[in-house]
Length: 249
Image (tube, rainbow, N blue to C red; front, side):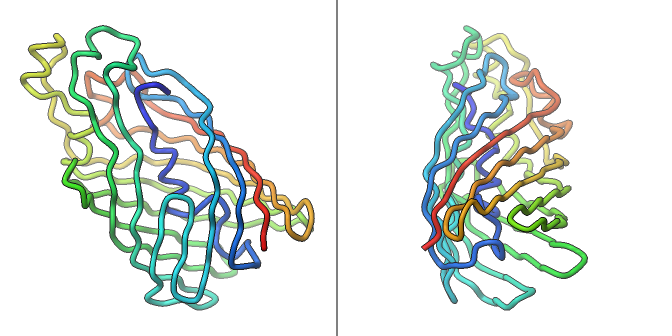
């Protein structure tokens, strides 16, 4: 994954590694690792480690690379203002293909917006709407998903289906090819519009002890046509596999 820090971290950003409601205490610390495919031409797969810091208080929370303030929190509803760091990016020097090295760098950014989660007996609805606050893409991104937990003593399975949306500016920043990039690289000029990327995911949580918890997760994402049609892209989908362990205080 040299040239693309995949959308894998949107999972960490949107929900944290361990979904709210599963953790019984305020603080948990641990480590995780993820392997993902890259949609970019010349992008490599790579295992990437990440620390895990989760905190869930009455008003504030930290989940992975996001932090937020609850506007509404009870057993069913969690509505919050959130700020997240999104390390999506493209580094031309790290790409395997010479013509891709002639493109401009796409930088990671920070996003801020609103997040909502509703939990009921029939399942969990998860959604968020974020906008770039560092003026890199000046775009917006949204996510909407439905999940249903299955509990088996110490094991919890959380399969889900959802879709991520990216605005035209967001897609064009990460997957568009400008006129001067086209002249340098030989790729066709391309301007991306907004689009939806549906996905399937499943998370397995296992309580090793009362304090230690292990996690396995996987997500398959079907890229939107606006991303697939980019001259920078040679994939129609991406996959993500992750594992981690935390200690709850």
